[in-house]
Image (cartoon, rainbow, N blue to C red):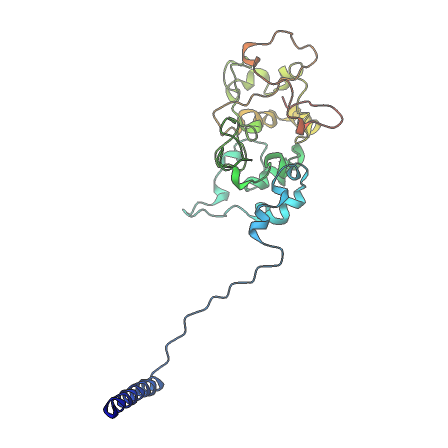
Length: 287
């Protein structure tokens, strides 16, 4: 029994000496650098991402009456971001032309997508676009059809997969190609414009005269500008097209309109979307 106790005591003593030696050796050694600690800023009160994502403003009916100020409170970067002065390849923006700069109506330097639609000179003069003109909310469950009980169903053909905007029903309003054949032109407008005095109003002074009567456009300003420069008209009606499919503009009746509907117009709507109707002049579409 004594020998067992003695063995335990000796073992403990050896362990103590070993630890002590290690400790003494460590005292003479250069201490290892502590791992760098990157302090993360504490989230500001009321800035919870999940709560913001599912804020009522991103869903109907709140999005339908949301103001730009409400949207820009969180999405201000869409106006603050600027175009690079020089591309990664070394090309200066000032020495090149973007696709939207090809017509005479665009002035100034290159600019970002949202700024061109909201705050540039042409946007302020001719357009009355708001955030919710194009963006009808941001439901994360709607990025793919049929993924939730309240999401867009698989049968909805007016839906673009994983897009925050349905381009076919929104962007094409101003960026669809011109159908020269339907309009009776002998060729594309750039090739035919001299024949018509470089003026769209040569014909449209009497045809489809009920136009641009929607909340997101400034009809009087467009008409006045179109009389001075046909590029104002062509810019939105083929000059800046980036889609190969046409947009079925509503064919709202005008004075002197023929009662027969041509084949190409038989499936066209006769009124614009109700949400774009002017409060005083009824539901009249852009033509």
